[in-house]
Image 1 (tube, one colour):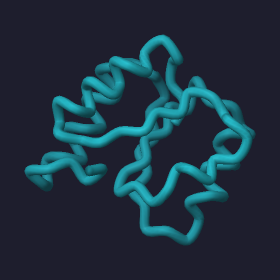
Image 2 (cartoon, one colour; image 1 turned 30 degrees about the horizontal axis):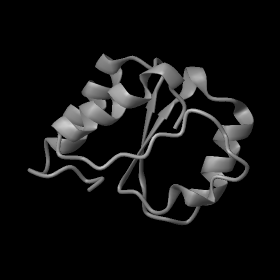
Image 3 (cartoon, one colour; image 1 turned 45 degrees about the vertical axis):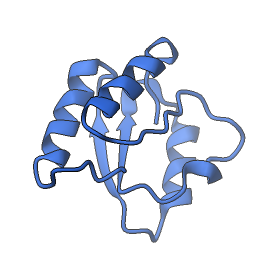
Image 4 (tube, one colour; image 1 turned 90 degrees about the horizontal axis):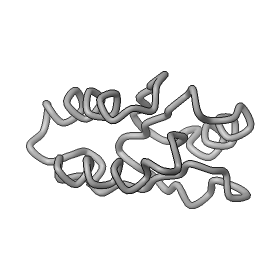
Length: 95
């Protein structure tokens, strides 16, 4: 959630390299109800609004979802998150 709109395709490609299924939300489209119940939620905090953050937290409250906060929206930041969270399993927890 968050990130740069022009990087959306690259985020998805990087996740695919880790055998992960990814949904990317760079903008808030009404409510965030279609987030679902992911195994891992990556928040790019520098590029998301406070309103978007509150909406995401509200939609995922009470669910057992791992949340990774990244200050930057770079590919290397996402790669580091995926390295950490896929190290435990051979398949990505988001699949």
